[in-house]
Length: 137
Image (cartoon, rainbow, N blue to C red; front, side, top):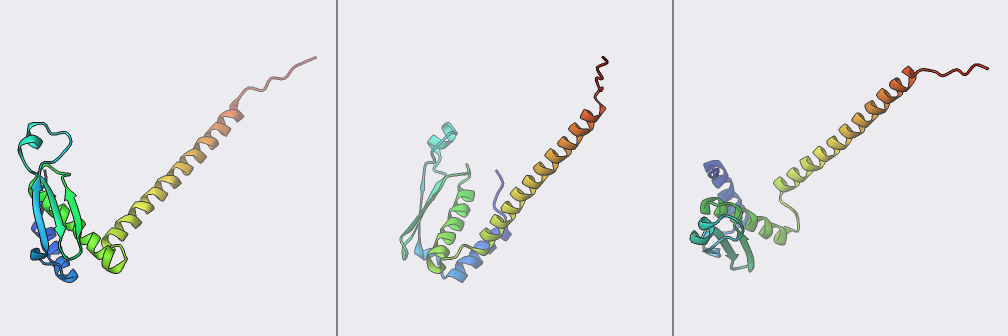
């Protein structure tokens, strides 16, 4: 479990101010997470449920075992949804992440093509080394 850094919390607070979302607008409750985890998930309420009262947007996050990390992730997702609803645009950071992900996917495709090309060249070299059978009459 990696704790949330101060820098990330400050960025989240700055983004909340930019969107005009205050802590008073958010109703927070803690529930038990689902999925594997055994006794920990049965005893601890680590999942976070947030409701943005003015817009009615609901978010539930129980990805991590830590309540603090889930609170951060839920708030970040809530802000993304609020921004999407208000502007109709995806957050700049998320768009950048998507662009990088697509780039990497293209890069791997190119690497695969390059690998297949070198394989076919190698196969051609091997074919040229084969013995030639000359049948004599």
